[in-house]
Image (cartoon, rainbow, N blue to C red; front, side, top):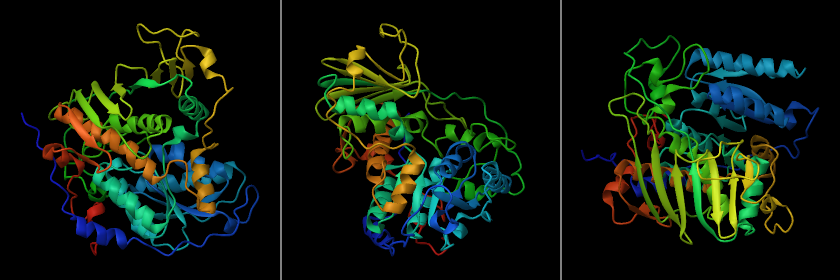
Length: 463
């Protein structure tokens, strides 16, 4: 059966230009110095947390407070229970540090949080499909932004957000936190210093999701604004399987539905493609050829891809294989050996040997390849990703994963997903950010927004 691409967004190029121009705002006046440690509240970044789910509680809010550079003064969530849990979490976090918490305001509508002039920056930890709308609204409101990955769901949204940030002068960091991990930075320095010689191939391993039978429709829980949670996605009946757990903070079902997330190709893929681009020094570009295939469950709520295979060709004829068959991580294969990097140790795949008997988080065909001696390229050092962002909020410098870089790695993921959907070779023009002479493939570069939600409706009076 022929796959029908999504409709092209109703926002014209002319309308986009008007909208992007409207996003220019007066630069934010920050305190002259944000001191670490025991400092007055007024010397710290006043921050709002948008989205109080799993990633906010386990990653974003702890990292912000651990940086000692900001105070969380407001939280927002469309789920009243999670919003109140978020407020309590912040207050308890301050108490555990023997610090008096600020007054933490709660907002069921993120727009009310953005309207507070005393809030200087926001962390956005919401499902992928709402990233573009909320980030654009935050930029328009003059806030600096930490945005969870992947940056956007579509290439068109990424272009819109990139140009809005560049016009506004806001500081936007995308949560590609592997850049702040020592082993990933060292791996990129070694590759860019020629340690494995000319890179010929790269293998990227990603996990996969599973599917199951659909749960029936359920009543929308009290205090949950389901329509706003759906946002720009098409309407679908409520069931806990489609959204997030009602009573805990386990892995949410939305991560396995293509209306809200494209699956592991963008979930983990956003991290690993980012490191691929960093190591190959192609952060402003992308692949030129891509071909993919994948198993997609039909007529399921959990319908993101299962086992998959994508082959990409990058400048310099570097062949990149992205597959669920490879160990989770990246293996750079060059004329003088290979280098592997991941978050932690991985089992050895068949036919591959390692000097240490398993693939360490940073490993190589010869341990001598990992020597720091003679490394010519030195990349920026970051102790922690949120801290790096907050330091840049203070200094107005570019963060480690700025919008221009994150858009390109996100685009490579989305282009791979499109190739998996179509199951045939595609030519990608990274400069034009379109497929070459392929209207069907280009139809997947955007998707319609359900009014009044989505980035394309930000100019509407309801927003």
